[in-house]
Structures are given as structure tokens and as C-alpha cells.
Length: 295
View 1 (cartoon, rainbow, N blue to C red):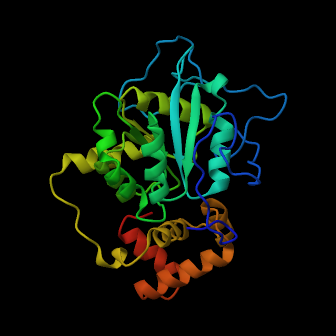
View 2 (cartoon, one colour):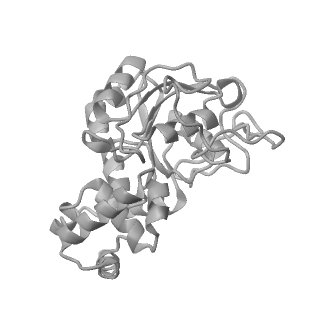
């Protein structure tokens, strides 16, 4: 995948956890309170990502949302993290939001934009937690999980994965959980809640955004494998993302902003989806997606 200008994103390996780990000259993160932006503006209270009590932990399977401003890092807690996402701007924003180690306890030790470089960075740095995007060049997050299965199975120093994605589609959630990820949160999560979720995953808990937990419960309650949709199978992962957003009524500009791509790229994906599904317009596309419960 590429960014809004169509340029491939180079991998970034290693880092101190106090700033971007090698994306020199990358765009500055937006100044918001979510993981899609940078640190709080001057004068605003900072979210510490620390709990009222050092030993506070949430029960496994909860929504993953911390109480306002709370986390489970606690005094002296520390976790080493690798960021895997093909959008440099997003990685920079996450780094700025959670990577101030003295404040959050999170040390970002490496970054990667695709499957091959992700496996290399994870293998060389052996982090405790990997923040993993679902859709990556080279096979996606599921392929990273497959190639890191031995690291996840290490009894003494396991590497645990937390999916962090713009997608909230059931098949994406179920795919990475079956692959071995300990949880799945969407990119609308706040910085303090993300810190909270990282420490829970380090402790071995399962963490999900509220509406996604139901997908997992439904999937594992049934022993029947879901039927393969041959029409949907024709689409690439990016085309499926665009399809869902179109079906939800998003304008092209909104989709471009959501997926960090250009409007022209969105138009190209929509044309490809309509052609592959033999549909005429976005209204037919919306009905098609609704019938398959993709919205």
C-alpha cells in the first residue's frame, strides 16, 4: 500500500522510544488526543496512561477501554513495543502519543511498513508487544503472525500481538485472532486507552474494542467454517475497505482521509470494485454490501 502521494513507505527499524524511530523528515502528527494525532496541545492536561492504584488490572475480555485517563502501566512498569503499519504518518502519530517512555512506560523499539520488514524487526528486537495493522503489503497481518508463531509460543519470552486497524470487519478481526493475536482495537482508540491495552496484552489478557468482541464470541461459538464468498474473494483487502466505507455513506474525500490515500486512488478502487462485482453504481454497491452484512 502507499500513502496519499502514492509513495511506498520505507521501513524504520530500531528506536529510543522518545520520538520517531528513523522517519526523518516525515510529516508532523496532528495535535489531537487520539492515536491518529500527536501529543496534547500546550496548556491541556496530559493523559498519563497510569492508574489510580499500581496493581489495577481489568478482567480479561473487557472492552479494553480504560477509565478516564487511567491505564495499567503503574509506577515502574515498562513494555517494549514494535509498531507495524504501512502509513508513516500514522506510525509517527502513535509514536508521539504513546512513545514518551518516562510518562507512559512504553518504549517503541522498532517500526516496519510491510510483512518482510516487520518479521525482521520483531525477530531482532524481541518486543513484548507488537501493534499490528491488519492490511500490509506482503500478505497482511495474518502473514506476520504466521511467520512469528515460534516467537509467540516462546514460554519464557513470548511476543504478543495487538491488532490496531482502521477495519472493523468481522473477517479481519476473526482472521488475526485465529492467527494468534491477543486482541483487536480500532484506530479511533485514545492514546491512554491504547497504553492501557498494551499493558493488558503484555500481561496475557485479551483486549477488544467493545463491538468487536461479539464477532469473536460468535466465531468461536460455532464449529462451522464460514462459507467462502467468491464475489467478495475477488476483491483486494484495500478494495474491501473502500467498499465498506462507500456502503456506509462516506464521501470520497472522507474515505481518502480515513485510509490515508488520495481521492483519485479512492475513485480507482471504487471503479475496480464495481467492475469486479458487475455493479453499475454506488447505490447497487450499498445494497450488495448490506445483503452480505458487510456494513
